[in-house]
Image 1 (cartoon, one colour):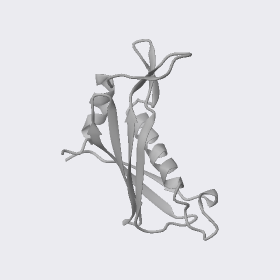
Image 2 (cartoon, rainbow, N blue to C red):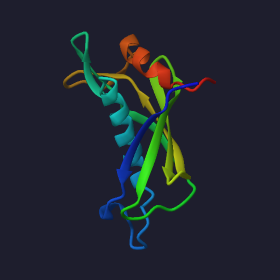
Image 3 (tube, helix red, strand yellow):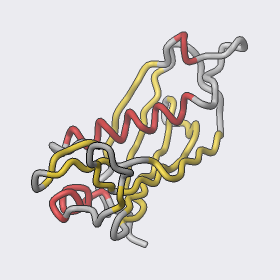
Image 4 (cartoon, rainbow, N blue to C red):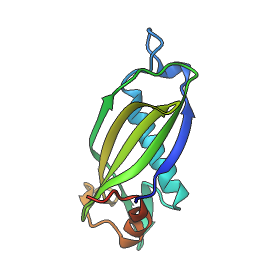
Length: 141
């Protein structure tokens, strides 16, 4: 059974539309914030230095399925797992809940890239130290 990273956030007024419901686009920011919280909890980051080289994890795919509306001041819990670890990519899974009720689910796929000043980012294999730390969150296929 994989580990599940859990984090919470309160819906802020700025996140809502004129109907008082969280605008759909904010779920992508919530997913990214939850991903960053998971990585920080593991001593990792989306931008880090490995072997004197700067790597980062640009997004190559993101999707979200909406189940229930959430509103200003509500507390949502976000569960994060790892759906897939490829040679150069990681796909994170996200499940959103309000008081135990499913609100949305989504995923973000990132690719490990080497960043050198003045050059186009180049995809590289994800360092084993990074993979080893996120592997406990991997959902078995």
